[in-house]
Length: 242
Image (tube, rainbow, N blue to C red; front, side):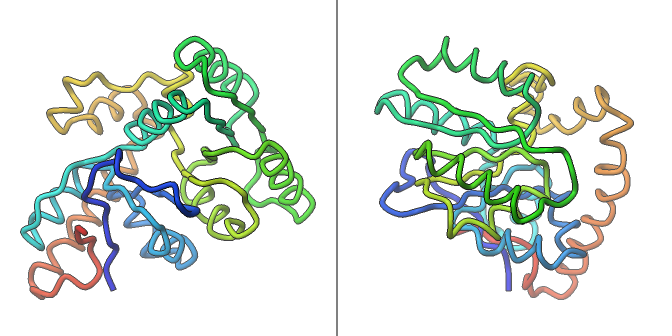
């Protein structure tokens, strides 16, 4: 069974029911092949965005379907515009207090009609029941229209998948690095490099110690998975567009 990727317009996302939105790139695809809980979380997404040029090229190569890359940043900006026009509410769960304060400060300047709340959980691999209950309670007391979760993959997607039934928000979005991009604590490559499909290369140059494995190890792993699907001529596990 393949991942079903979003191939529409973010402006057309409906807020009529709770919607869990995740992203996938070549790195998360490879990790999910070894982590069944992560794979289940991605496949159970209501909306799964193709956030990576590798995914876009893979879909084109295997299925022949054209697909537009939609990043977590694109989603974040789109929902903030929507919230600002409707005097909406958003909640940021994750990262550290310094980053969350920078996000709040920027929101107040750029989107003054949005009401925002934040919560920085303890940095650890797994949360206990009491910690999970505290986070969920903080979210639900605030009653956000949108919950942004930034705990890094695959932790954030699995946390949302486990607790989404208890969370009261119209959109629940796992957007990871977008917290740092928007706060300015990590600078995202310019639109010039993004449009060329080379955002990954600039991030690698800026953070080689953190990013090298994602591209030099998982890049070939993803390419091998793509080659096997092409040889089978039966794309059962790589993503397809919808």
